[in-house]
Length: 131
Image (cartoon, rainbow, N blue to C red; front, side, top):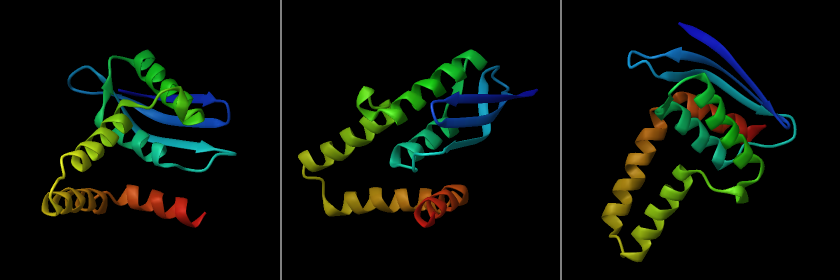
């Protein structure tokens, strides 16, 4: 069973389809985020990845998490999402420990493969760059 979710927060408009998974948790599919005055940022991409990889207890839990993300997109200083903090921590750890060029190249290579295999993500970045 699926239902529609629409959230308007300031100048953001988020629409999605909610789907009950086999586990009984709620997943977000077919989502779209747009803003009349704000351009796409790296945080939008991290938000997309968050939605791809997480499910929620129910519709209210999904709505609360999305509103939290929209608040952070409006004011990044209000608190960085955990995914951004983790990414920055990994990058800082690699620099602090003097990670070898080979391991850095491996991480970059894995990331490139992950990005290249996600055609929707590539299309989104292309639209962002050329609009």
